[in-house]
Amino acid sequence: VLHRVLHHRWSSWPAIGFLFVYNRLFLWGFLGYLFALGCALMGAAAWYAVRKQPWPARLAVGTAAATILYLLHLYGLGIYGVILGGFQLTEYWETRHRPWRETLGRWLIFGLQFLPAFYLFLFVSPTSKAAGRIRWGGIWRKLSAPFNVIFDYHLALDVAFLGIVALAALVLLIRGRVIIARAAYASLVLLAVLMFVMPNELFSSYGADRRIPIALALFAVAATDWNGAPLRLRQVCVGVFSLLLAARILLIWQVWTKVQPVYQQFIAAFEQLPRGARLISAAPGLGGALPTPPLFHVDAYAVILRSVFLPSMFAAPHNAGSSIAFAGPYAKLKQRTPSVTIWDDTLAALRNPA
Image (cartoon, rainbow, N blue to C red; front, side, top):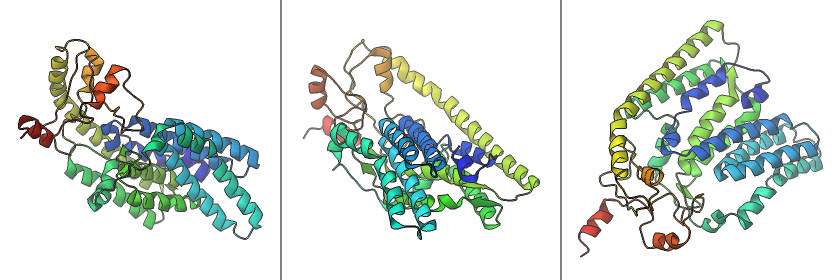
């Protein structure tokens, strides 16, 4: 839809976005953010579609989109704001010779749409209390961030897939067979800059910087389109991308089939627990990497199956953006137990308190 309003026509090109639907954030379980990201692209499309309408229409559409996105996910609102900021900068540059009052009015409408979201954030949401919870990651996180848009459990294949897609897109752009919508240039630059300046932890939320590449990739797909490419070239590109998608699905299916017996062992063990039991979880040997099969928070199955009390649920007070909270006596018990999954160093300390 965003591609449609930017290029004023329907096209087969945006189908390349299917290559990125299964990404590292999906594997992590950040479904709330991914859903909000899709809505952010729809909201940006709505704003761009009414950009020439009278200001009440623009304000109504923008305010509705911004408020809904805030309620869905704070990062979704952020992506929406960055994309619209790029649109505004482009419009300002193209109309810089207009009277300053007209320019000021358009920027004022742009800013006013975020007022309800800012009010909810500052005076209603507990997330604002974690404004000081900001932590920066190393340079390697920034350099490896693009690989978050494609994840097949095989690093070499991830590099190959991403390289093929990036090289094909670059060649098509250089040869003029694919173009970038004029209105999208500034937004692409802003998203790219955001990817490098975003901290690792923002408002107590982990992986803030790793969420930007998928937004950049999907917006880039919407921002580009065929440009006089012959039918044969389009067919070849569609065929190559379709083969890549099929290969990714096959690899993912292979891994999922292989790891199911591992999960079944955990499920069988959890089913032996008394209903309502208290469970503490340890993750020896996992370190800080994402293993195959993914075992982070596998203990959540015990909550589903046996209604256990699990203090390492993604509901700790320091996770200000969490939608789950402990109540009653369990809140006090939670405060006296580890707030995250136990790692190797913690296990060693428990075994040898001295």
